[in-house]
Length: 366
Image (cartoon, rainbow, N blue to C red; front, side, top):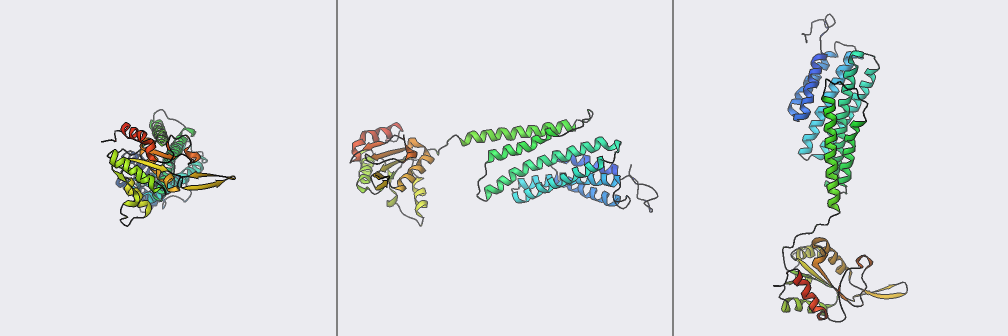
């Protein structure tokens, strides 16, 4: 039971340790409630108790070091909850600093406990092992959260970060709780419960990482919202006009040709994305525009802009919504080997029936 501090502190010892231990128990409850206001008050009380005790005990006295350990435990809880709030508010740099501060305090707490265990104070032994476990629990949690916060900071900075790998690394931090050398007290369910909690959270992170990994390997395209057709072309003006006439006059389609659209102050790529984004299908004319000399031979290849715009439409809508019209002597890049093209010699009209069939299969024809 706590007593009033006597005028002569050395004449009658005052129990500072019991109320400090009560504060630790209260701080543990705030881990569940994430009550920042409550843990702030608890920390203030803990600091006040420690300051009073430091005037009574000798600097290296066992009881004062126990008090210091208790104060570190409360501080670690405070910074962990504070970091969680910063994360919710998307103050990622602040949250990372606070999680790192949590880890530093937990490390200091475990070092202090290692020294206290050398004192051979048997009555405190189990308690010290228990608080060592609590420091480890909070540390592993903070380290795991810190990895995810570092990921968010990288993403905000425009840097690459593999979220699935980050989640797995975070889960591995949580799993470290299983490697601790623990002393169990069957009357205290806290330790098993916290071990189960971290393992359950690790399970959730690993499941999420698996789903992200699968999603990365599943291509998703933008839904078609327009039946406008974008015409991708090179220097063959005659072929472009022939294709436009076939699509508009014979098949009743609406075509978009980039050079005929207004610039609106855009750069070339902005103009392309704005107009291409209004279309749901594309025809790419791969004509004999560029002569390539390689290994003593020559061959024809489509213009680079044609290949770029094809790739954009492939990524946005998928290959089924891009039709390649390849002139006979054009050589396809090796990366596009095996892709089916409608091949013609001199005129687009040679593959008119195939063009009509492609559009009809996708219900594009009016």
